[in-house]
Image (cartoon, rainbow, N blue to C red):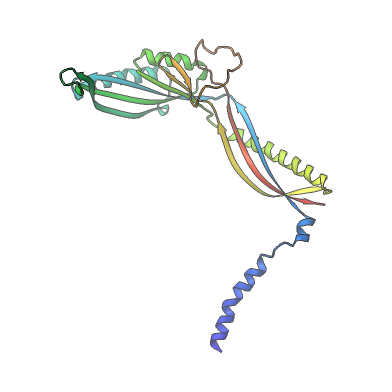
Length: 255
C-alpha cells in the first residue's frame, strides 16, 4: 500500500503539467489564425567617425639600431597626431614588431638561391579615430608628411547608432501592423493582436582602403557613385552607411 501511494504522488505533477499546456484545436486556429511577417527597415546616414591605421618602419644592421630608429619615427608621428587635435583616447598602439630581414639571391656558381642576412626591420602600427570627416584627406596628408610609411583605411562608422535603430524599429513595427491588418481584412477579420517579436540588427557600409597613393574598395569595386562636391579637395568620399533592424512578427487575426 505504501508503494502504490508513492507512485500516485509521483504521477500528480505529470497530470498537472499536462493540464497547464492545452493544445489549440483546428477549429480554434481557424477562428483566430496567425500571420507571421518578416519586416526590415533600414536608414541611411553619412558616417560621423573614421578609423585609420598608420605605421612606421625602420631598417638597420642591428636590432637595437632598428628599434631606436623606429622609435624616433613613431614619436614624431605621435606628436603630429596630437598636434592635429586627436584625443588621447582615440590614439592606440596596435602592434610593435622587430624581425630579421633577408635577401634572396641566386648563386651563379651553384645555380641555387640562398638567403643573405640584410639586417633588422622594426615597425609600429597605431590606430586612430577621428570625427572630423570633412578634414580627413588633410589628416592623411599630414600623417604621410610626418613619416607614416603605411596608411590603412579609413573605415567609416556611426558613433551612436542607437537612435537610428530606434527609428528603424518604430517604422518596422508600423509596417508590420499595417501589413497584418491588410491580411486580416482580406480574410474577413477586423483587427490584429501582436503576439511575438524577434529582432535582428543589420549594419552595412563600404570601407575604403588607402595605401600610399592607391585607393581601392574592400570586397571589389563598387558601382560608380553620383557626382558630389569635393569636401576638402581630397580623394576620400565617405558616402553613407546603412543601419537598421529586421523583425520577425507574429500576429493573431481577430474579428
